[in-house]
Image 1: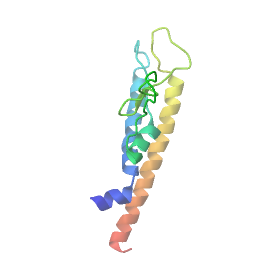
Image 2: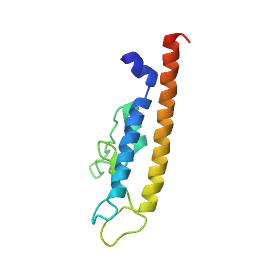
Image 3: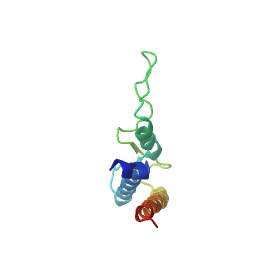
Image 4: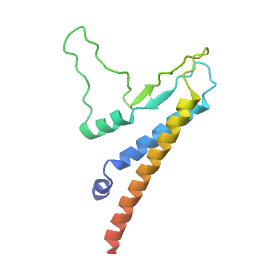
Length: 129
């Protein structure tokens, strides 16, 4: 199993994170008319860098400093800041969500294609083609 995880590298984790991000954006779109719904997103770069480097939290150097930086959860979730406010407290903006979903879907497909290529190469090597 270690041989397979070394062959796939970080792309296995990236595919799972991209899938999670697609689900979050789909939930945002589904709740576009729900009052007080707060749109969320996944900070892909932060979560992936934590997976590579280990989690290195910020440290306060003096008593008056805040203990944390940007409010990103332990799982990389953050709330999206809307460009324009709505009267019902909903922060989902359909144009933004649709654009983000399209980009996330293309990123997911690119990662999946890369993994497919790596697996195909490993399969050919094992067969001796």
